[in-house]
Image (cartoon, rainbow, N blue to C red; front, side):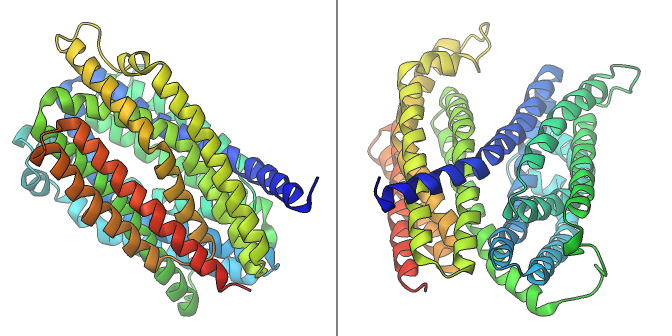
Length: 450
């Protein structure tokens, strides 16, 4: 076996060992969202509609602030690789500080969200219900952002198994609290959409508390919470400069898919319903790439701390090979049983079932096209974060998504009359451009290391 092959196998094994618990964590987090959707759908259509738009607004704001927590990951990985416990503590604390400040700034628009939801085109009934949800759910904003920081901190120090088990516990607890508070079971009051919001807040505080206790018990030498109130402005600035572009990049990507849903709504209700189903299927499969890309960030961050360019290159090859292999499996699944995948999300008694199924199958087959470009672009972003390059990638990704992907989607869908198929082809073009430009950026940055 050649040295290169041995290194490839070693890096692949390390990525799997680190990444699979993160994949499980991402899937479990997705399951929490799915549980909320299912249970509110059983309760009432109005509650489901209001929660859908309210949580979308909550998440759009959240992913910007989550950039600061995500920035902690490569910085702690770098510090951990050189044994610099002080630096790891400094950046993690300031990540928590920034998350607190962002949470406080985010509360006013979440509290007075009725007018905002009306402005977004919602009916007064949906806006009123959505505001009820957000006025409770905003209390979970702070613990949710702090949890992102602690997850990044623990994962960067290769403590990923706990993240999976805590999130799985959250899935069970969320289902139980939802069942009690939404429907009024087990002697609890029937609170409907407010019950779902309370459940979310409970889960967020539960997760933060468990991770904080674990971090302190498992890594006492880092003294993470000792003199937490002391400012560290140099570290604060470092986390801010690395984290804000990460948050804005996530916003650009999330906004791309939100905008695609709006445009699909212009085509028709059936197409929008099928679009939502296809996105759910794609998002579930994408959780694998989310977890493995985080592992790539951590591994690249450690190698970056040692200024080992050869190791970073080996990590990148292993990460891309793993993503490509899973992409093949995902494409085979989507091409083989698209009807079964789509029909699982449709009520058999729905009068529009056959129409939704027909369009949904088409979109799932089109979604198979961007499995490879989507996995490539997220891994390229992850590797660039590992080497602490986030500002230029933010611009490359934003231009790819919004100045290329969106216009092409509109052109194909409406100008050329390809409808829903054209819209998804445009998404593929945007993601493909992001994969190409971000991959090129990574190769350029790699040359400067060492």
